[in-house]
Image (cartoon, rainbow, N blue to C red; front, side, top):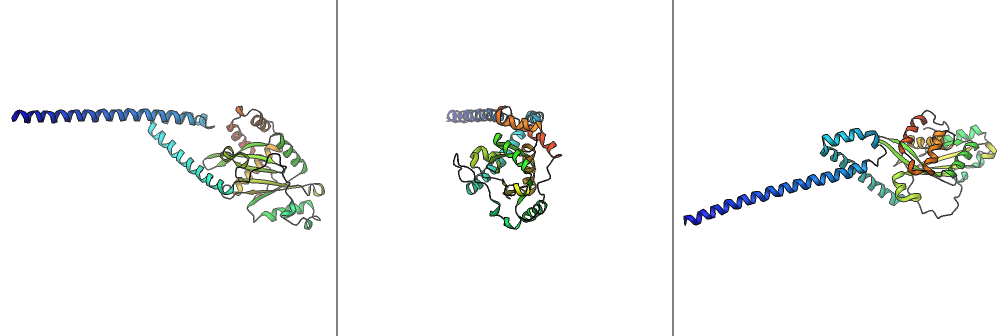
Length: 294
């Protein structure tokens, strides 16, 4: 009897050791899998970060954080990914309700008519200066921006717009910059966030549409501009910023900006987003004064 009990005790102890060994082995295997998964994820994250136009600027700080605290580095990236996913879902929801109708290839754009928004007969006898003031007053209480152009400015903009029909404009935001794609269509310029343009191309919902009215070109020597923007996406100052940037690229002969237009259109693989941001600092010193501020 005693020998049986001893054998049972031995079996229990042995079983316990075997069980402990299995637990230890399982824990080790889980830890190894965790390390391998984290390493693979880290490599994938770094690969994605290197595609970001700001990567070179912050590469040193990224490398330091990666080496000193890889877990914290991954947590930060995960938070950014969650914020981005939330933004994309919100954008997708908005797109479903505000997408443009599909533009049929080859269809000529209809030129906007001034008499659709105001009584042209009442301003025909006014001077150029009076019309400009009336145009400003008319838009003061509306969710849009307005401005005027000379015929020469208009011709330069839309001649260049035919050659460089799409382009990117950097828009300062609270956390860096957002790139806005602009596209010329008839006498209008349509703008949409780059993220939406990449997904929906020319049918992406717009954040700003600049419409140009040419009826007073011959008699008064002015082109009237009206910029309608989505108040859920842009503030009035941001819409003005985009309109100013557009004119500085398309209405003057700055060689550096012309080179950016050329590179974006002809050599997209050589185009660098950071060059646009560098130009934004010089643009702030040259902003045109024909866009009405509110």
